[in-house]
Image (cartoon, rainbow, N blue to C red; front, side, top):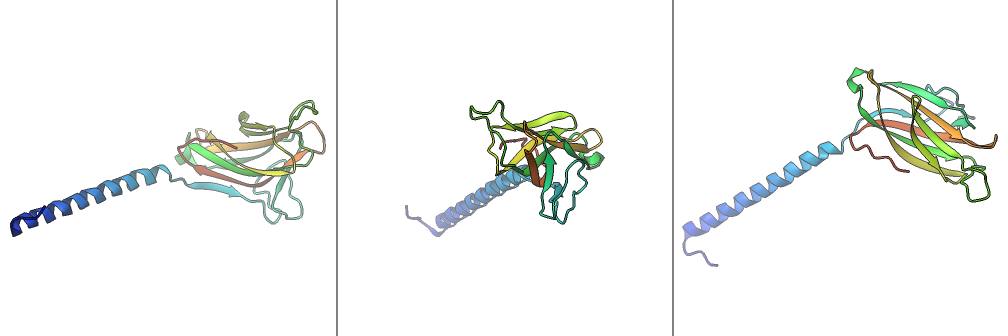
Length: 183
């Protein structure tokens, strides 16, 4: 379509500018809304470097290799204090762990599968069985702080042989509202 006069051309240009402005506003609103959903804050990170157990009880380090080892049926734990601002808040616990080579995944030969368990205090929050030994896994588990903003993470390798254990490479706890947990 050809403009009939300069005034008609000016109106078409103004309409085009407003359409672009509104389009940009919609894009900015979308970005602002959805960027707030994905944000999380890291509250704690344990990486067990230089023989540092980072406050963990009932586990041990080995020659500064950066892992926290937990023997069969032992519950290693750590109490995290995040303060009242984080009371009753959802959290995500990201754990990278290794299972010893004797770990049984129950393939028909063994009586039962060995189990990697995670607890919030005394409440079990994750159970993983059917995993292969001599393998490293990373998982994210959802949980919640208590009324004081504290969280007690316990890890237990539940196995049927004395030479089976697990080792933690790192633990990272963050805030988030997605509450997804998968291995």
